[in-house]
Image (cartoon, rainbow, N blue to C red; front, side):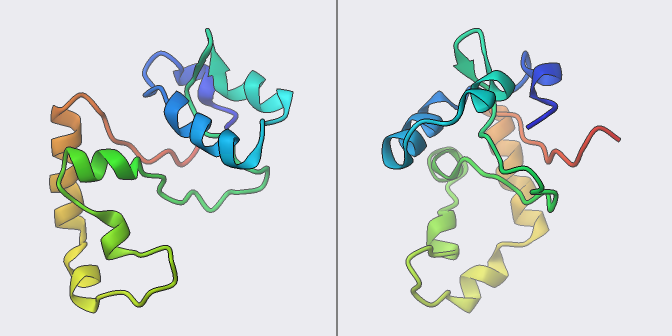
Length: 116
């Protein structure tokens, strides 16, 4: 969350994601606006301080609509059991194929791991 200002001109707007989160859970604190929102546009999703595991964050809707990968089917969030075959199919090669499709559609992909 601290590096958003440096990269704000090349980050994908995430206003729709923030709207869905705030509709369900309420508004973010003003510090989140300061760190993640520039010129009225959200450029990052606020993360809790200390979340230094650097998990991959995905626009699940874009993976499904553009790359044809249903991440929620592969990794269900409702507690239902995962299909081992689907999980096994989601490997690095297929991830790169999906990332290339997203990039070609104008949604660049990256994994932020810090400023160093």
